[in-house]
Length: 304
Length: 220
Image 1 (cartoon, one colour):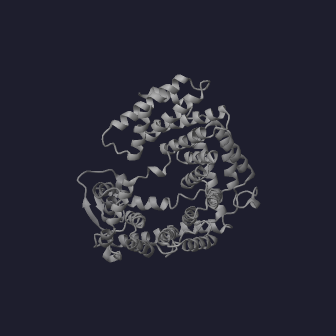
Image 2: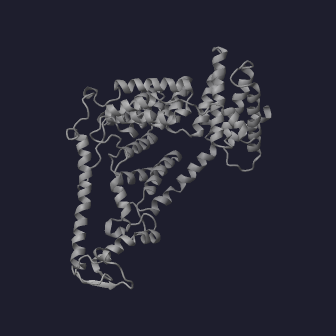
Image 3: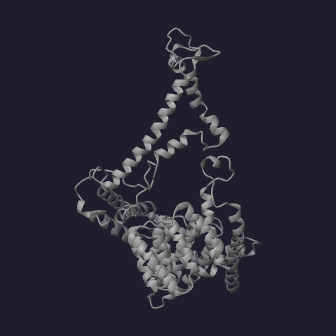
C-alpha cells in the first residue's frame, strides 16, 4: 500500500521518452530570444510555458542520465532569470546533486545550501532542496527537524506538510503523520488522494498496533473507513479508495463485533459495495489505471 | 527603471502572514476534521493568536496601528504603487496632448439623424461654437467615441487579452500583488484577535457525520 511501489516502470518509460526528445527541443528553441524590435517580426515568443518546459526537461534529462542536455537547460534558465533567482538556485542544486559522484560531493553541496540559507533564511526552494538532500543522505531526523522549522514559519505549505507526513510515516510515528495529513486537508479540502492516504495511514496504524486496547484500534479503523468513504465520494471509481475501503472494512468487521457506532450491517454493505466496484474496475479494458494497483486489486478480489 | 524589484520579506513577517492564513484555512475547512482534532487545533491557534505568538514584533503589541510611514517595508510598497501610477500618468498625458494638437478644432462628419441639444458637449468637444447644429461631430469627439466604443469590437475580433484592450492594463495595475495580506497601517494584532474570535464561534460539523449511509445511498 505504499506510494513508492506504485511508481511503476511505465512512468519511467515516459520520462525516458521525454528526455530523448530533449536535444531536438533544445535545437528547435534557440538560446537567444530576439530582442525588442526583432521580437515583433519573429514567430518565436516568450511564454511562461516555455520556461516551465525547460524546468521539467531538466529533471527528465537528469533522471535518464542525459547530463549534457540537462546542463543546457540549466544554462538557459540561468541566462534568463539570473543565478540568484531562488527557483534557479534550487534547480542548480538538483543538477549538482544529480551529477555528484561521491558522498563527499553531496556534503559539499549541503554546505553550500546552508551558506545560502544563512544569508537569506526565507529562500524556500533552497530550504526544501536541503531537506531532500538530508533525506537522501539518510539523515531522517535532521530532515524532520528542518521540515518542522520550515513549517513553523510557513504553515500554509501543503507540499511540506505532505513530505513531513511521509517522513513520520516511514519512521512509524503514525499519529504525527495523521496530524500532518490533516493539515494538508485543511489547505486542500477536496484532495481525494490525500483523504485516501490518510485512510491508509489510519488503517496501518490501527492494524499494526496489537498492543493497544481494542477500543482505540476500532476507533482508528472506523475513522479510516470514513476517510476512504470520503475519498470515494469525491472521486467515483477511485481504485485506491475502494481497495482501502475493502481492507479497512474487513479489518473492522473482524475486530469489532461489539462496535456501537456503526452497525455490522453497514460495514458489510460497504464491503460489498467496495468489492463490486473493484470487480467492475478490474474487468474494464484499458482503463488507464496503474498496472500494479490493478494487479493488487485483482489479488484482493480473488482472495475474498 | 522606476520599478523596484520586490524586496525579500523577512522570516518573522512571513511567519506572521502565513500563520494567519492557517487560521483562515482552519475556519474555512474545519469540516474535514474529526471533532477531537478540530478542538485541539482550535485551542492551540486561539491561544497562540491571543498571546500574539506569531507577531512580527511582539514588543510593539497593543500600541495600536504603527504609522505606515515609519515602517520601511510598508513605505517601499507605497512608493512602488506611486511609481507605478506615475509610469502610467506620464505617457497618458503625452498621448493626450498629442491628440489634442492633431484633432482639435475641426468638424469631421454629420450624423444622419437629429439629436437634442444635450449631446452637444459629447459630440462637439474642441469646437466652441454655440450655434452649430448638434448633428455635426467634431474630430476630437469622434476620436473618443471610437476609443471607448470599439473596445468590445476589439475584444470580439482579437480575443480577450489583446494589446488594444486597456482593461487588462488597468486590471494589472489594480492588483499588483495579491500576496500582500496586511495593508499598511493595519495592526496585525487586531487581525489575529479577530481571527481568534472567529475560530471560537465556529460550530463544528464534520463531513464524516453519517458518511457511510450517504455513500451507500448514493448509487450502488
